Image (cartoon, rainbow, N blue to C red; front, top):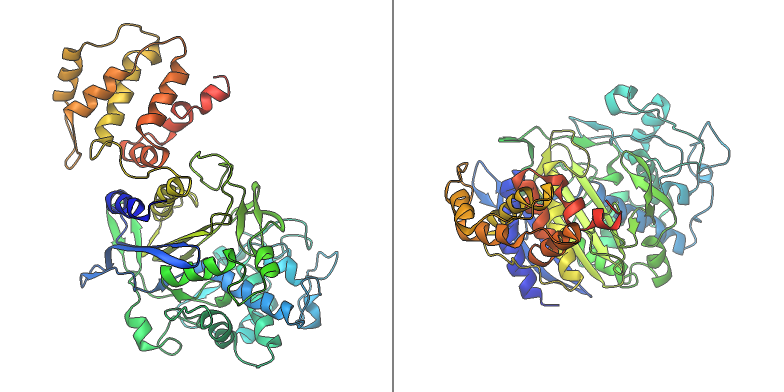
Length: 498
């Protein structure tokens, strides 16, 4: 695999993706084997000052930090200080009122404690120490989302279903704080036993991203976060998570990639190979923030995918490259994305100073779409495909030509193709929005290739796959406003007999 080809593809595609998604700044790290092999940064860390995004810019990881907390807890398991299946009520007075049994560490790490979905218990001021925060939360007994009106605090019995819980991971953090032999705070434990041995010098897991808890040098390198809507970027005030072991870490993509590579490579000295393998292999049925999903499994915190092209977004590349994934958001201005290919030992981490305010779903919001589009480029590379453009800067014109050719022939069952003169007239008469690139030749070439055959769906699908690889097609579909195009033209309709 040529890392230079991947770098060239990222440099070509990422600015275009950022422009399409309205992303102010973005940083990427790709790790291979034991090393961070490629880093890139684009755009701005702060729009007001013009400070550029760099590979050393620090940003909130959001929920990607849950893996740090999970690893810290598993270290205590390896030291015999708590068992994965030990009831936690030995250490904390937390009991699920629905039963039927006590909550265990395994339940917490697989989001199956019965605690309902919550958003992190944010506030405008830094939270109290973790012990006090959790005492208040469990005494109140209600979710923070819309003051408890959206989801119940206890959603069901222990072990019954996946329910993504920030409070549950905060409880794991408190167990780390209570049980570590050094008697240090959660933040200090993670620094000494996770970040330091892995060389994550730009990472910190503070109670709050605030000058009282973060060194000035690190805060100075943090990006400014932007809440976005189409054409609008808002620098909203700083918020602080009470459930801070679930998402208050600051890091760089390179540091987080080192962490993921350590797990993919057998623990990196911070976990035994067996425990590291447990962390990144399926332990239970999983899901997403919105609830359980039959397409996703969960390890210890990480989502686990078999690489078959399900909801994990593998872009239709097929099976054979299983991977783990997670992501994070920090309100209201930052997004984080992680994917690690377990057999290939490749890690991808993407950080952006954007969190879109629209509720379009966790995968379609622009702040998520940017990372997912980039992930498809890297996925193509992992699968051995050259990720660079096949049609230089003419991809949009080429796809428009394929669409026009289809609509004038195969879609309506017409066997007579447009003449070269007709296609030239269409292309030359195009009326374009400002900034839309246009190539008459690319349009004409593409439209001329579409024709009525004995098997038009199959042949059209083969044409599209040959000329526009999945990651490039996905971006072009979004740019042209036809996101549903792929099911038929990438051959899914043919396989289903449509």
